[in-house]
Amino acid sequence: MDSKSNIDKIKKPFSIGIIGGGQLALMLVEAAKERGLKVCVQTKSNKDPAGLYCDFVIEADPLQLKGNKSLIKDCEKIIFENEWIKIDKLKQLKSDDFFIPKLEAIQPLVDRISQKKFIDKLNLPTPKWIPLKAFINKEEESHSICNFPLMAKSFKGGYDGKGNKKIINKEDLQSFINKNNSNDWLLEEWVEFDKEFALVGSRDHKGKIRLFPIVETFQSNNVCDWVLSPAKTSYEIDLFALNIFSSIVNELDYVGVLGIEFFYGKSGLLINEIAPRTHNSGHFSIEACTSSQFDQHICISTGIQPPEIKMKSEGSVMVNLLGLKKDYSLSINERLDKLSELEDANIHWYGKSRESFGRKMGHITFLLNENNYEDRLQRSKSILKSIRNIWPSPYSQKLG
Image (cartoon, rainbow, N blue to C red; front, side, top):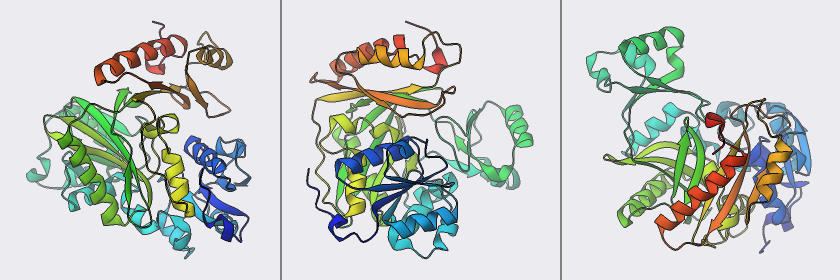
């Protein structure tokens, strides 16, 4: 690997500091290690996934400014595991040049309402929406999306199915309004879609964009269950997705890796959400591509020339391993041992100390050699069945 970067000019102990210590941070650390870079992580515990593998841990809540200051003092560049940050507080440090992406670039994407406003500003396709408070207070025209069902989404912190609530009818809506703070939610029109796609890509300091293949994601209980790459799309879909990605990162002058989730159906391609970071749908890239999403982000953050992105196989399938109920018959070690016996399995274990229902514990990737989508899809379903016989989805805990 080409390791030329700002590492030769480093005066601080660590070339990269990461705010956050979960599985995304872990895989960023692993990518940095592949490049021979030293990494410091700010996280609550040195037993968090990234804390187990990095060079040094600042044990502090990622939102704590004192810890942020220590990270800045010891690291050349600072990157974020996720968007759950307090931009205003970080701006107080007057250290924006250290952050990748810059705070101004990430600010419109840190919560769902800011995202929706930004998407509307660019006139990009997304489901109709309205803040819940505005829905309650405004006149009839604000109720233009009020065809049930509706989707209520939390203002901040929604992920892995959390922060989403299907609203069935007026009574259900009134009950929801009575139980929740209207400032914390938005309402979105219900979208009937055929497929869900995701696109992850990067933009470097020179403005060059590199894209991974569009993937198809399969959900269970609003949580990503598995990912097939590449998706079956068309030239028009690919071009439209590229234009959407380019519009977003160029408007923000965004540097780093970014992911976009899409609905696709009779209304065409609609933006579901934007993730200003590495993304679960891009985990396949670790084995399946010449440069992973984590490698891209590390390279861009440290001044290394990012490699061009190419598939190393015809396709891949990535399956999430989520926490099961306590009474499941197989222990974690027994499950992992059985999974490791599957031919050509690439297991990524996050090293989390506690298994809880629905928690992301790891993922497993298989490369596919079939040269058409239908054969890859069938092969993926066969692999998925083998995995789920050992480690079922927590939302359907039964052996096939």
